[in-house]
Structure formats: C-alpha cells, structure tokens
Length: 554
Image (cartoon, rainbow, N blue to C red; front, side, top):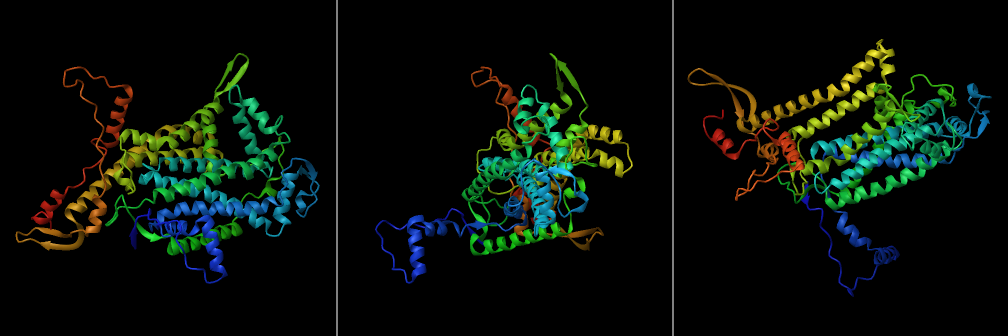
C-alpha cells in the first residue's frame, strides 16, 4: 500500500533548457513525439496516480470493459447485417425457414447466425455484453448512491453516469429491434402505442420514426443509424468526460487509518493497477464468451419474421426495459374523449408521466440532498450505508419498486408458470406498487439504526471473546476485548449531520421573520433525514474513555 495525492505533477522544464542527445533511433522518435505532444510531462503527471484497492470499485471497470466488447463485436456484425426492410424469399441454410417471405434485415441476421464463421457466437457475445453492461451500470450507480460518492464535487459525474445508463437502455432496445423478428416487432409495436398516446405530437413522432403507417419501410434503417452511430457517439463522449472527471476529482475511498479528504491511499496506475485492470478485462471478456457459448439468447429463427397480424408467445423485453412494460400492465385502461380525440391515459400516465418523473428524480437526487443538508464541502471519504439510514432506505425502496414493476411486466409468465390467476397477479402488483416500497423503506431504516446501535456497542464495550469469567461475588460475565485502533476509526470516522433549523420567528429588534415555503420544506425534510429517530448518536471519546478505563469494561 502507498499513500499519495493524485494531483502530483511533474515540473515542466524551463524554456531553452537542453536535453541529453538521444542514444538511438527509438529515443530520437520518442523525443520528437514528446516535443510536439508533451507526452512525457502528461505521463509523469498521471501514470503514478493513486487508485484505491477495493472490490466495489471494479463495478465501474466492468461497465468500461463490456462497452469495449460491445463496440468490437458490433463492428463485426455491421459487416454482414443489412438494415433494410425490403422483402426477400429466404433460401439459406436454415431449412425450416426456406421459402418464407421476410425482410432483408431478418434474413441477414439468420445468415449471420448460420452461415458467417463465428457469427452466432459474436451475436450472442454482443447481446450478453449489452445485458451485463446495463446491469453493471445500474449496480455501479447503486454503489455510488449508497456510499454517498455523488456528493460535491461529483454531482455532474453522477448526471453523466445516469445519462449513460438511460442511453444504454434505449440503445439496447434499438439493438434487439433490428433483426425484425416476431419478438422484436412486438416490442416495436408496443413502443408505437406509447408514442401515439402522447397528446398533440404523438402522430408526428410516429410518422417521423416509421415513415408511414406501422410497420412502414424505414424503421429498421432508422433504428440502425440510431443504434450504431447516434447513441454510441453520445455515449462515447459522455464516457470520456466521465473518466476525465474521475481523474480530475481523484477517487473516493473508504474510511480508515491514514485516509483523509486530502489524500488517496492505494496503488499507482502504472504498473500495478494497469496490470490488474488488463487481467480483469480478459477475465470479463472470457466469462461473457463462455456464457455466450453455452446459453442461447434471442434465437430469432425460433420466433420467425415479424408479421403485424401475429404476436410471439411469452413476449418479454430484456430485463432493463421490463419495468416500463410493467407500468403499462398494471395501469387501468382509462380513456378520455376530448373534442373528437381519445386521450389514452392507460398508456400516457405510466410512460409519459411516471417514467420521466422517476428518471428526473434519480438524476436530480445529488442536488436535492445537497439542498437539504446545505453542505458545501468536498467529500472524498465514502459513507457506510448504515450511517445514512434515510438515503439507504430510499435506495432500497426504489429497488423494491423496480422489482415490483418487473413482476408486473411478466405477470402472464408468473400466472402460467405458478398456476395463478392473471387478474390476481395484476391486482397484487397494483397494491404492491404503493405498499411494498413504503414497507421496504421502514424496514431498511430500522435495520440501519439497529446496525448503528451494534457498532456503538462494539466501540464502547469491545468485541465478544467467548471467554466466561466468574466474579468474586459469583456473577458470570463474558470478557470483552477492546477493538483495534483501525476498527475503532472505521466505526467512528463518519460525520453526523445536524438537521437544518428554521431561524427565530423574530429578530433581535422584535421584527417578525417570515420563512418561505422552500425554507420550511427544507427544515421538515432535514429533520426527516437527520432528526431524532433517523440516526443513533455515535459514541464520544469521553464515553469510550470512561468505560474502557473503569470497571464498566470487562
């Protein structure tokens, strides 16, 4: 382990300074390049940057590596895929489809699967990597949320990560829509219904996307352009910006001896961290390749080409879009007729009101918490989730809501596989949508408070040793051992925020002060976050000294 600040930089040579003459042509080439690009100074300033060594930080690396895998396999697939909805009669090697009319997009995807060398494996690696990519981004953001790593100065980086997650979800949807099979066509039809439910502009958006009545002849070419060019280009820019900010702000770290808000304890980028990162990349790539080789995903030849008059059995989107379908399935089919037009509230409210509201609340949360706390300081030490009970409970409630909506999105599968009534499953999810997140919040908050009490007990009375001692008057007690200084620091290093208090109703001159609605709201929310019942006071040094130095410590 080494400790260093990540802002160390090499001193630039003064103008007119002389260097030793390069000894060979390689040194001459390096000297020529450095004189024009400044690579030496840049490398000296950044290659010894310190990175903490903790398994949770590898989640972000999985996001980066799977994105690289997606790009590499996607380039290979574009060499053979034909983004066209022109109709052809299939005459390839897959006998069950011979003589069936289909789009060129579907036919080329079948050819990639059965006639291009390694095509099926690359297709599966591409799809599995996309699933892992979105899952890794979601878990990475949850790690950032639960540990408070989004606080100043990383609020903008949180927004970048959020945008990457949302764009990854939509790019995945566009990607699995390209083969024009019966399953993906059902998903596109679902999307068209959501677009048409948008008042005033829905039909214009539908005509722009489809180029005419559904399914039209332009949807696959347009989705192809969005999938391989537009969204990946935006994501690449966001990813570069995200990594630049990680380097600029330096990495967060867990509390521990020698770790402060002004240093980083860990390993240097070169050579230790880069060697481990390289090995981890090939490990991730290898595991995805193994999964792709043994677990089939999206077998389009089993679904057949898309036909508007058919729908595939058990049609389900990939897991990261399942919650949007769940919103639709649990919403009652409400409709309102206005001036000769029908407003489909059963689709409009879930996808155009609830869905954006959830996304906006996620993106804005760092700014909301910063407003509640009023904390303007920089934070580089992570919180243990138990020490922020309300934040942790909010995150757990969101996860429970997400899982409820996933169940709603597959209510037909739960009904058929568990031999339940479809209506019963739907009604259960409708109630659970409101009840389960509230219960999860209450349970998680109490759980965190219980863990805080346990930590306080360990600090004051030490750990149990299992040794029983009999006192002179006959009482049996268990001997406790004091915790090591490192463990004590870990359990007591966190700060406990005090709730924001409203100013006095009158000033020193007796003039009434009026608190605005935002100020009163902030005070109420702050009391909910940090007031009595939302955190357990951590033990003070005086309490610890009194117990450990006297007869109170066994």
